[in-house]
Length: 402
Ligand code: ADP
Image 1 (tube, protein in one colour):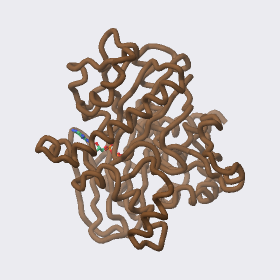
Image 2: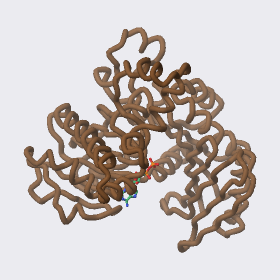
Image 3: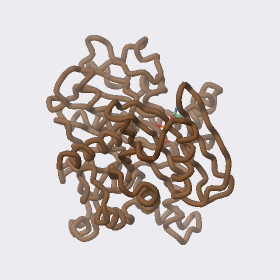
Image 4: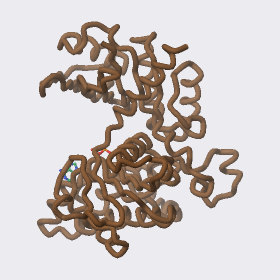
């Protein structure tokens, strides 16, 4: 049976899902964490809720891949390595080079390498994953799926910053967006749920996880998105600022006595957002609990998050001159009914209304708006991994036909 791996490699982690294709059946999923550090954690979920876990020292991603495959055989998930016919890798930054997924060869590896400046933390890690699989399974179909590709359809009016134009021409300084695979997945699913062609719909997709972004999808294409040159921009996130005034950078650096601007950016990325405002946690569940116990900073953090998400939804309704569907997805979008209700309450005046009972749900796919709501509001669990596996399948079929 043909099997495909969907891979999301971080600097010290390797997340993966193994599919039987084209059936799209998830056979096993897991993560290797703390690669290159002591006591790496190795987890595999498979079969009927079965779980394998081990703690051992794993020096690098290649060792992680070898161990993973060996263990999958031991657990009888795989009979032999030969069953794996394809692997798809999530790559964060595709710049303007990749408006679609790409079959990985030496040139593509060089191109991903050339985009490292656009995602200095992520692209090198993604490349490490790609190379590890290439070394262990050199002959299988290997595909790169970019977080930014879906947004390459944005018009210049939406992707250009109000900076000297040469900075775009000379240095690629523009909006690229992120979470593209997720936005595309839920937009396609929304059209299926509404039983209408995607090409005829105006959809706003709200991917609200630790990282969060909102996208306007018109005729099946991303026309604007809230993340920017990097995933730091847009709405308030778990630990990221979202949009702020750039003048705060020199001002705060002086107050904090920072000399390296990277230290400031690290604070914007890791110490801000819900965590920074609340002083408690970046996790929605902790903040909901703290708010219930009367914590005022948790309360203001939650109201700010809702406000910024709502602002983008409002902006995009105006930009597209209407909306047919608003989709909530990812950890918060799928699991936080109160947050969804608070975000959406301001749209009642436009006739867009949540059904309180339908909205009182977590993690299931369903319409959550009232029957006569002016636009459908949908809850759709995202599945970036299956999108990656589908792209691998596409290239596998192309190779078979050549
Ligand atoms: P990531 O961007 O890391 O993939 P996720 O999509 O997993 O993030 O989303 C993580 C966020 O989802 C966290 O803020 C978490 O608190 C929130 N979340 C997960 N489950 C729930 C829940 N049951 N209720 C409220 N928030 C939840």
